Image (cartoon, rainbow, N blue to C red):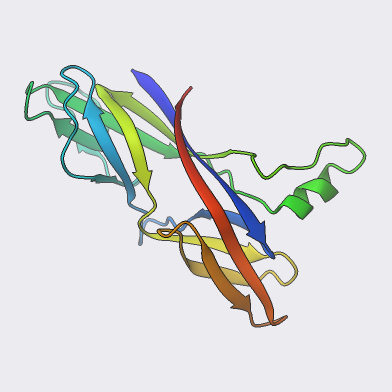
Length: 176
């Protein structure tokens, strides 16, 4: 069993609390490129996993978010995912919360969005297909159709007529 974390970093302007839009009615489909750890075959298609679906593991009493059988070595592998509940927060907000400590959030701060328990698979890449949501820092306006597939997002907060943006989005999958 290997545990991974899906992490994000970005520069937020006039927005905070960035997270995947994930509800039981409209689950976020986390999209990954994977590789079998037994035979090192890279799967030729991207896989999608959501945190609400569960599948039975054959020959076991357990279940998993995703079951995969490698076409080369024929081994069955499983993945369980759990959202961390963490959100990427705006730099200014973090500096105010930590006032006096001398520690403000830096642009290169990584936030873990997802815990991944993988049995037999390595994660090569995350593809941010699907909608994210965030909140305007001044107004609390909810932006729930944030598309980060291009690595950036721009909009206008209609309550203040200020531009809001998320730029320099980077993703990382790391072992814990």
